[in-house]
Image (cartoon, rainbow, N blue to C red; front, side, top):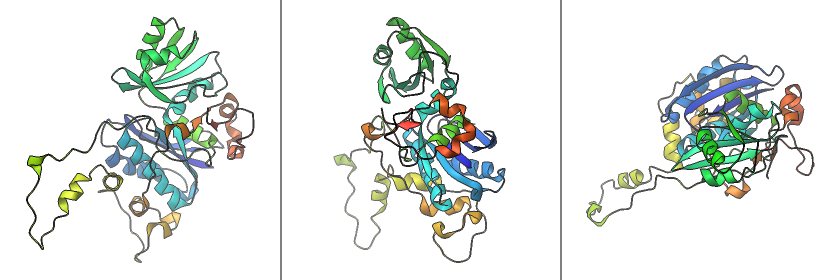
Length: 334
């Protein structure tokens, strides 16, 4: 089975197609950027898929990072992943950014904890920790770095992520044996694909995991900004549209504007009726849709187990997980 992995959660736009039989990426591309994810994502996916034998029909699954991360980045990535899944009629799974960061360390099977810290600004970190077996021992959260450090115990702890220097400094201050393994700003897109292969679609829906309220808020209308009444017969909907610029449809429109197109069937059919072999990036516009984030406590946390990551040849058989199974799960709630 081939899986398409998408990451737009942080400071890059990335896509990768991985074959679970070989464990080797067939095609991948990443662009470092802080802004402009919406404009860059779908053309990047188009370039990646052009290098994949069989194209979109060869895909068996889509995985997308669901956060924590940039609000706009998450929504754009999830919308694109869900659109491709609908068009190709294949499962779409969500992978937490924290699990994707931790996966390369967990497969090394070192003793102690693996902590992931992403800089959330103002002295805070997006944070979680995994045990040696890959189980998440702390639920994902946003917390002051000192508070996060105190939750790690005596150690040893290996820390990864853009917030690793901050967390390591606070860990030293409270007496925790911690080391920075990597301070990379974005997860490896290949490991997003590998964790996505382990995920159960029923337990890992593609829903954004925000962890905090957005910094950007709609501006309040002030008394001196109120416009005079519009004469009858004139269009007076433009002001309303401008005020709703933070709504999901506006983000989705931005994500699909000015994208490369191919010849489409002459019939005026909805995009979901096009066969996958005719799938073009323009087709996705009609079916882009995402859901609001569930409450944080309901969001699944990936457990990236050593056993699962070490047996990539058997990943296809792990597509379904029994939630009652007491063995380590690739995706479970703590």
